[in-house]
Image 1 (cartoon, rainbow, N blue to C red):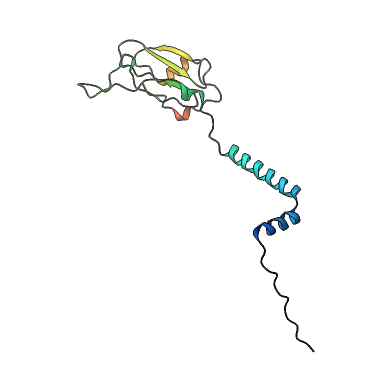
Image 2 (image 1 turned 180 degrees about the vertical axis):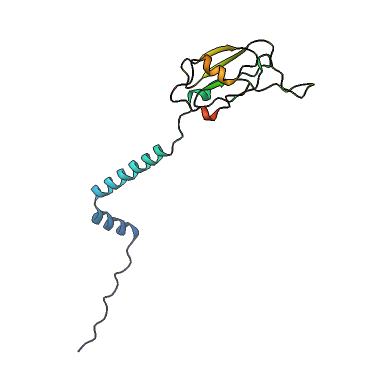
Length: 148
């Protein structure tokens, strides 16, 4: 009885021969379909992680003049009055209320967005009411409706 030896390994091939053998086994059609699938998946991932478009309210300017200053409220996605920041009191410890009317721009989820004139001491709630009130989509919980 003769002893059986394992088969001898094939001599090493160059990488170009290995690539050609792999392409012959894999096939050009599968290679094209695989490349197309990778491109589709990459495009889908890029579409899913893209930044959302900014809201319309994000592009509106803020009023910063001291003549119309009153206690402010930020613009929210639910609709709010764009009021300027409060003017720091110079000599007293209280916030000063402007003597004349205050002009505000009300934008967002309100019935009639636009520029409105409010009386001295009016609150954000009055600005929303002057614009016809909040719509059903408005999120008023993000606003301080009592801000002057």
